[in-house]
Image (cartoon, rainbow over the protein chains, first blue to last red):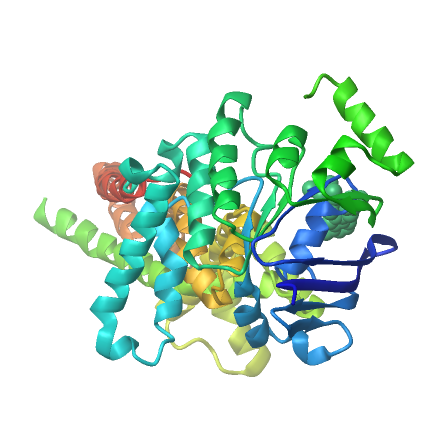
Length: 264
Length: 212
Ligand SMILES: Nc1ncnc2c1ncn2[C@@H]1O[C@H](COP(=O)(O)OP(=O)(O)O)[C@@H](O)[C@H]1O
Ligand SMILES: [Mg+2]
């Protein structure tokens, strides 16, 4: 059974259909890269998965449980959404760290708030909090930031901020971690440290969907690559095919333009 | 000499009372007005914005008269106390100004902050109180400080509806041919605003540990 199954998803803004009847699935431990030119609907797809946009049609199934069904009004209720969106994590292009909290606090904040809803919170409060904080420290250590726990976002470089953002998403232990162009806002010399962290996650079999313009990176880490154009999936398959030897005319043209522009 | 000074202090105590009461009520009322002016319910939003536009677009001095006289003229129930009328006019006027500052502060917080909180499973109130609020406060402290300093000086306007604040007290002596009490009222405002500036500056510095 796939960990994620998306069926017939579409989303329109006013008169333009941005996602057009998309279906795909993802196996546990798989890394999927999503490529495509700007405006093709990649961000909107991730936002739909994370309940930041409400799809107009389609279903989203995680571990066999339908967590969203556009035909069922109940799946839009605020309370239900909050639990269901925790199946997914999202790392934004622009980090979106909380400026008034330290790196460690950014990572623990949501977990500590969620813990308050646990039935045993009152009796085991200190224990639970300590667990969450220790877990956050271990995650920050794994992204190479154990020396920056008490730094505020403005005291960190872009690459460090993005690594905190990744740690923050990991702390809630999502089934599927989504990245929206995680290195696009970074100076070129800082992309390496972020890509290295994502590569390690792929090696540890974290289930991920990565929207990226880094073709060689996508080629190395992905199990599958999805090429999107104008709201549809044009080509889907292993990276050797989609990036190395594309079958579709539109994919070829996209990659040609990409490599012509001096990228590698 | 002593009667002059004690009269000035007595007058200034009224300015201070008006100042404190206005702040205490206008700060929360402003937030209520902000929620109205940002409401997704269009009629409420436009009603509140029109109200704010009128309050900000007309002189506070005129509003003082309107609040003092209109209950009597419209409903036959004259304002019992001039001080109450002054407080109502000041609170409404400053709440309108504060509400615009709050709105600017709230609207200046990037959408990404709300979204980051939401995808981490935080509820809307949690996002507002744990993520947004302090960033808004940091942004509004400087413009609020300006308004608060202006308020101290505006309290002198209350004399137009017969409230014996410090300048009105001093003018009585001017009519007797003594000018220095009037001029020295400036010192009261200067000292008060000096203290206020220090306090507000401290608050601003306490929020310096992060950047928005
Ligand atoms: N909130 C929105 N309102 C209206 N149009 C939008 C909105 N978000 C995205 N779009 C449009 O949807 C299309 C796809 O956008 P997006 O998903 O951001 O593409 P990508 O991430 O592939 O660049 C674009 O044409 C964009 O202008
Ligand atoms: Mg995008």
